[in-house]
Length: 311
Image 1 (tube, rainbow, N blue to C red):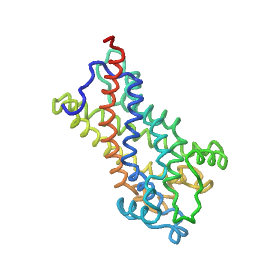
Image 2 (cartoon, rainbow, N blue to C red):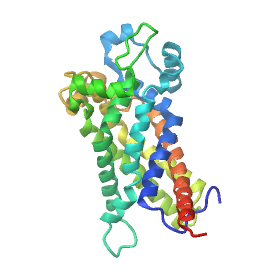
Image 3 (cartoon, rainbow, N blue to C red):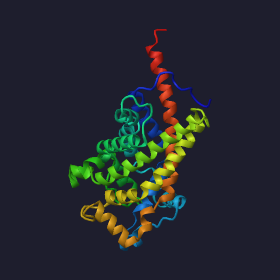
Image 4 (cartoon, rainbow, N blue to C red):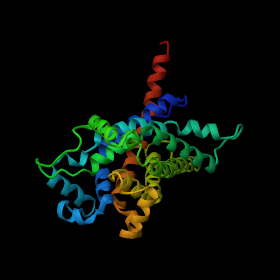
């Protein structure tokens, strides 16, 4: 057995909620530069006339990160990290931590197993709930990741994370903090279904057919499969979401208008811009998050049982 043994008592909703948020923050700390590279590659191509003269051109994941470090400094790949951690503590706690509870709620009484439809419905529900709560943190995170600071003389729009929340609310209204909510709900419903349902099914089959036991190799394989499926199905929506949320007021009338302009001006392959960093990020993120999450659930349950034990 690799890692902690499964608890004899199933983890509580509170343990799953806290464990999911904490595990997601840890995964973000390790993979955030890949996410920033993905955002830079996705927005490359906007405002091409001014971009050619003012902005560096990015090529590939490693090339993007190296260009950022060279032109903006070594801290640049972590622009927006604080907002990213805000996002994960609210977002992942809901979409991952509440998934099992919502799945049980949708499962008919007396049924031993949840159907794929039930799992998809649970993934869509928790994904939509999470976006509704955490959207402002995602807007701020993307604004920081997309902003380019070329040298000490460049203007910084936001002095810090809290200033970004205040500035967006003041300049664009409170609705500005929820900009792109609908494409984000669509994107995260798809991602959550792909991640949670794929992880759930792969892990269940590995255990049912006794191919692996409930330990690290099982969690690793299940998480890797979840990350790949999520990247394939979510990339087009993710590109539209990033472009729309990063756009100045008036550039796009709606997410649909953003999608159509992207298709007309840059072609269908633009919907998979940043696919490699997306997969590297989502694959790595899923492995780190799910492995950490499984261990945290077991550790937190041990702590809880020790606190409740009279001896």
